[in-house]
Each structure stands twice: as C-alpha cells, then as structure tokens.
Length: 128
Image (cartoon, rainbow, N blue to C red; front, side):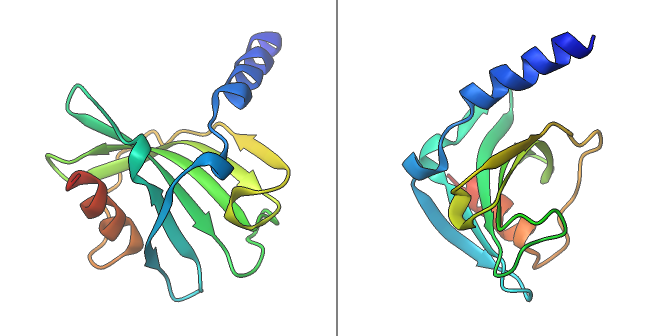
C-alpha cells in the first residue's frame, strides 16, 4: 500500500503544472497581507463542477514555513461551494523554489463566508 501511495505522489508531482508558466491574476488580499491569484487560462468544467488553481503568496512564512501555496480546487457554482483537492507548498514566493506536495483533499464541501477571499475567488471563477 505504501508503495502504491508513493507511486501516486510521484505521478502527481510530475503532472502538476509549473507555477512559472501560469498566467496568474491577483483577485484578492487578506488582512495578513496574503495575495490570492487565479490562473483563469486553466479553468476546467466537467459534470457541473469547475476546477481551478489558486496561488496564495504570503508576506511571511506560514505555519509550514512556506512562502506560497498552489491549490487545486473543485467548485460547485450552482450552490456556491468549494473544496481543496491538492496543495503544493513552496519555500519561495509566487510558487518558486522547492515544493512539497500535500495530498489531503477536503472531505466536506465548504461554503465561503461573505466578503472572504474564498468568496471573491469563487465568484470570479464561476463568472468565467
């Protein structure tokens, strides 16, 4: 089982897009100085769901000592909810430098709070 998991993680590492080739558009900023970017060129729609990448760029390292995260999300625009599918953490800003893959999908849908960065992002991707 562990060998299968390692192979899965290795496969995902090579299939994740490089953040340096993305077309990031800043869509939000929070009170902590974190900037939120979306690559609108890679939005995918399938069976009523929307799939999109978000880049979080931190002004200071977060609790995992990362300066940025690249997150692959699944959204349901019909009832306005989302969940994270994959998270890549980077030691440098804007998704640069060494990365670490976290495979920890959300098991539950999340509904973004009003005026939150997640609400702004979901509004933006659902309007495309």
